[in-house]
Length: 116
Length: 111
Image 1 (tube, rainbow over the protein chains, first blue to last red):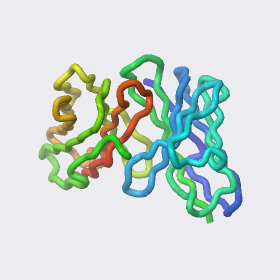
Image 2 (cartoon, rainbow over the protein chains, first blue to last red):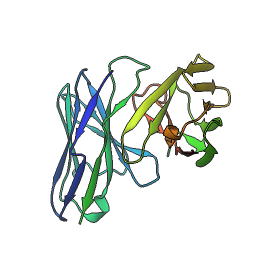
Image 3 (cartoon, chains in turn green, red):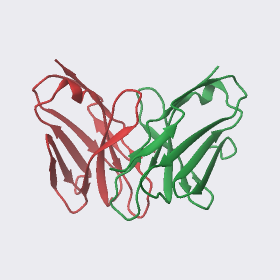
Image 4 (tube, chains in turn purple, brown):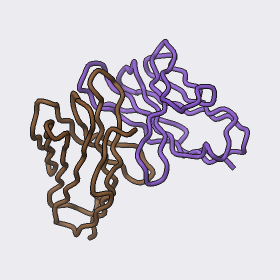
């Protein structure tokens, strides 16, 4: 089955640090990947849609300068949390789906980001 | 705002019992999907039901879809302790590729 690899799985760093999270589709090409944020015991909130070779589409309220997304190839999208602060601490999850309609999304295992 | 609302928010049952969780959504859809999330992990796709389907089975899972009521249900039969997880429905509103997730149901199956 389709596999999405996300790393790192856990990051603990000081306030002001920038953190990069990678999302890779291992055995299929993903023209579109999605980045979500999840708070404890809550649902996934879509942050942005990452499109290969073009700019990401951000959801309302998500700062594009804060959360930089790059989708340079059909198998890799990155999310960089710039100058992270404690309020950015959260669980970040990426997903990707194959081409065509009615395709399920395949998720990475998530990244637990803790900003001290 | 979130597309989906699920109920119950939390459900605790004994092993062997059936678990039913419901999802409601707001706009027209092409399909509806159910996912499972174990604590601290990513989501695992369980089942996809298209908008022209009314019921679908996969192993111990049974999903129904009522597009007139904009609702779906997930039934897990003969539950096991390993079924303990959060369950989410997700829908891509027609004309979009974005998936909007419901609020989720936290299921606990007691051995």
